[in-house]
Image 1 (cartoon, rainbow, N blue to C red):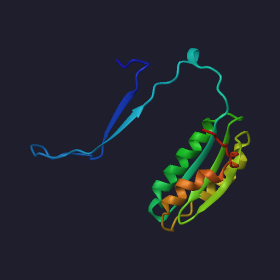
Image 2 (cartoon, rainbow, N blue to C red; image 1 turned 45 degrees about the horizontal axis):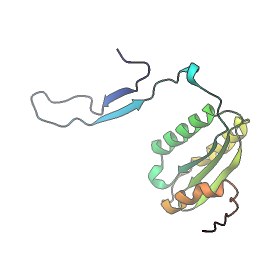
Image 3 (cartoon, helix red, strand yellow; image 1 turned 90 degrees about the horizontal axis):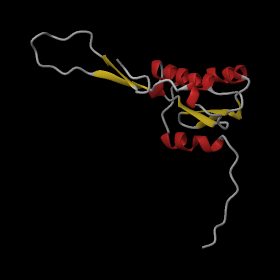
Length: 146
């Protein structure tokens, strides 16, 4: 019997059948599911500031892009109204679809979500790594004296 405080390991075979009596490899999908938090142990938290960055290049077209968008939207639905979220997409360049804003009005965020879907251009991973820096204003530089 699983312990309620332990993670659950889910193993799903990626082949429907195996040949009896033959040596073969069985690829599997392994998922680790965190346990539900104990409500008695939860404390108040400060607001999150989150930038969701999605690769919408040609290599992500179809099901991979749809799954990335679905997962990102799932994250947004779990945020509190005081949290801030930004939505950035990249392919051969970077598009800031939603600058960092409070999540309170998810309808406004969702209107921009559909713009993630077109995919066809090559991937520029450097643009994807720089993308979150466009979501929030730059911090003032601190000068340290040694």
